[in-house]
Structures are given as C-alpha cells and as structure tokens.
Amino acid sequence: MADQAANSTDGRRRLPSVDRLLATEALATAGAEHGRSQAVDAARASLTAARERVAAGDPAPALDDLVADAIVRLRAAGRGTLHPVINATGVIIHTNLGRAPLSRAARQAMEAVAAGYSNLEYDLAAGERGSRYLHAEALLCKLTGAEAALVVNNNAGAVLLALAALAHGREVVISRGQLVEIGGGFRIPDVLRQSGARLVEVGTTNRTHLRDFQRAIGPETALLLRVHTSNFRQIGFVTEVALADMVALAHGAGLPVVDDLGSGTLLDTARYGLAGEPTVQMSVAAGADLVTFSGDKLLGGPQAGLIVGRAAWVAKLREHPLTRALRVDKSTLAALQATLLHYLRGEAEVAVPVWRMLSATVEALDARATALAAQLCARGVPATVVDAASTVGGGSLPGETLPTRAVALTISSPDALAAALRGGQPPVVGRIVEDNLLLDVRTVQPDEDQMLMEAVVMAARITAGD
Ligand SMILES: *Cc1c(COP(=O)(O)O)cnc(C)c1O
Image (cartoon, rainbow, N blue to C red; front, side):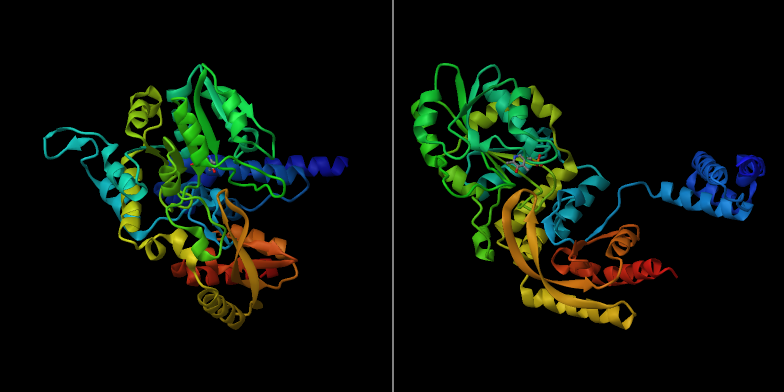
C-alpha cells in the first residue's frame, strides 16, 4: 500500500505541465484552429484525467499520448454538443431525437430567410410596418376552415397563452379523464395554474357526461377545455363528451371552448392502417373556438404552437403580453409556411418526411432493409431482416403500430454495439429487442442508408475489439 502510494505520487510528479503540452507542435496546430482557450481547457482536462489514473495506480502516460488525448478533447469541444443523429428506432416523432425532420422546401425556406433580410414584419405593398403573424395565418385558415390563426413557440405555450388570455382569475372546466401529463413534465393542471386560471374538474377518471359540465358552469366560468389524452388510451367502461356537445353547451352559456389537440393532424391517419386521430378541421367544424396543436408532431413542420379558431378570440390572444414572450422566429415561420404549402398542394404524403415515413409500404421498407443487410454481411457484419413494428410517437396514437422490416444485428453483445453506434459519427440510435439490435429503416431517411451501413461496420469493429 505504502509502495503504491509512493509510486502514484511519483507518477503525478512526472506528468508534464499544461504549457509543455501546449508547446508541442500537434497541439499548437490544433489550438490555432479551435482557439487557444479551448486548447488550454483540453490540455488541463487531459492532465486531470491522467492524474486520476496515476492516482489509481497506472503508470504516467507519455507526452505523445497526453497530446493525442488533448486533441481528441479539443476536436470534440469544437464540434459542440448538438448533432444530427440517424434515427433507427422506428419511432417516427421521437421527441428526444428532435421530432419531425423537415421537408427539403422547408429547409430551403429557412436558409433563405436566415441568410438575409426578409419582410418578416414589413408590408411590402404599403411600405410600412407589417405583422409576422400574417405569414402563416392565411394558409392555416385555408387548410383548417378557421377564421383566424396565430403561431407561437410551441403547443405548451399555445395552451398557456389561451388560458392566460381567456381565463386568468376565472374558472376552466375540464373532464377528470383529461388531466394528463404529456411528457417532459408538461401537466395540464400545472399549466392551468401557471395561467392564473382555476381548475374545475368534472366527471370521473373514466366517465364524464355532458350534465357534469352543465352543473359546473357558473358565474366564474371562463371556458370549457378539452385536452387530447395523447400518450395514453382508456379502454373499457369509458365515456367522454363529444366536442360538438361541449360546444353547444358552452355557446348556450356564452362561453368559448378551447380544444388542445396535441399532435393535430391535417390528414386522416386511418388511411394508413392506424386509428383515426381527430383532425384539426374536425375540431374547427365541431365549433371549437380555439384549437391548439404542435407544429412538429403529425404536421411534420418546425417546432411551433399553432392556434386556429374564431377571429374575436384569436384577437384577444394576439393582444396578450405573453404572445411577445412566446414569439416565433423568422426561420420557424419560413419552414412552417413551406410545410403548409405542401398540404395545400396535396403533396404532403410525398414531401413531408413524417408522412412519407408513415405511408412507406412494407415492400419498400423490405427492399431497403434487405439491401442494407446484404451490404453488411458482405462487410463481415452478420445481419438479417426481420418483421418489426414502428410507432408514431410524439404522444400520437398510443398503442398503434405500423408493420415494418428491420435489420437485426445478431451479435453477442447488443448493448456494447448499441453504445458504439451511439458514439459514432454520425451517432445511430437503434432498439434492442430480445437480445438483437434492431435498425428500423422506416425512420432512417433514404439518403442516410449508406452512412448507416458504414456506421454499423465501424461500430461492429470497435465492439469486436480491433
Ligand atoms: C405534445 C402536446 C402538448 C405540448 O406540445 P409542444 O409542442 O411539445 O409544446 C400539449 N398538449 C398535448 C395534448 C400534447 O400532446
């Protein structure tokens, strides 16, 4: 013990200084590219790590090894922390992986307004100040049948704004069956509280009737709220009140209905072998005064909170100070406009990646998976093609799956391979099912297939230990 302690003190003493590392040609060159302060941090981090290893009994590393380690750290820091990832999980709207990939037109529209100036808040015809909220409004109205529309930062913000603007200090009536937590800690009762509204729960967890709402309406009532239960589903002895019935009741009492649709689709999911998700058009047609939904779930656009509905209520929201705090930026509006135009042209299924993935046929997926597996086998990585199930994700259509074909990597240590894939460039995220690492090609963009193949070959090599 005493010997070992003496050795490690010795080893630490023998480690070079930060300046010694920085003076080497290799680190000086890398430092010139990434910045001197970054190089200093990397050298320090390398020495700290080495000191810990030496304290644990390892011999002191050579100068070259320390420099190489510092350069790896420097390059990693220079890359930042947010990177593209290949999604091979089969979860189409994967919140952890950035939700909806954007269409080519949406990406180009973002780039165009980002690179220069735009008429974001400028009325070109009149030559005077305009409104950023006009850009998506006409398109949203045309697509949903609503009178007016407003776009904010995300749907959580849209719900918060609607409640703050219409119900601050008053009561909001909602069914107990809809007091949900969406994920990421977004709980409807908490949002209600934050808006300054008071929650009035009616009905029971599994059954709420129109008469429950009727009894709860009083002089303090500001609105009736309906929330899509998104990520969970109740089966069995369940009753919810139809939106049209809520609307008739509310309007009879002079109150508005706010409908938080969550995902908010413009297309009918039932056409793709899934359960029917209520469309935004259906909510508008049923008479909801405000309908809120996400831009980056089933719509397949940028992160945004979309609000459509009656002009008078939308105007109240627009005047509220929170609208400024929840403001969307120009690149979001550009991408949203381009995404909505796909729907207007009737080309969403082929142009919007979320819908392309949703509508991909098993035959097409099989062809890609088979080609990928064959290439992997030719490169010495054992791979087969198996039946699997993709999911929609993003709190849409819980329990619903789409049959898919996945590449199964039958390797003895799937966890190690999965870790190597996540650590690769680009990182790949797959799914482990019964000791096989599955790569579901449904959520891999077709132009990523080759990159995915190379990434798997590389990760398999690392895992095999050569
Ligand atoms: C996802 C979801 C939200 C939150 O939407 P974001 O765009 O993620 O802010 C709110 N309500 C429901 C019902 C949802 O499904």
